[in-house]
Length: 81
Image (tube, rainbow, N blue to C red):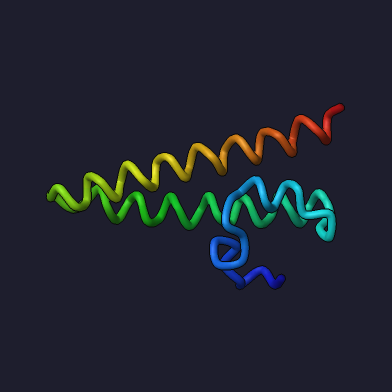
């Protein structure tokens, strides 16, 4: 997987990146941080809108952001063990 690839397209969940035995620690972290950055950009875009659909989308993105943050924390904890 290249840096320019969107990890959201290949991996169904952030946990799938963490458990992918074909990736080293640094690559996993890079993919998750990329995913997190993409989500932040999408959330920033949603916050500028003022409608019900946007509110639902924003909530969905926030839930996904939580999963990505937990996956990053899991990787960092493993590295420090």
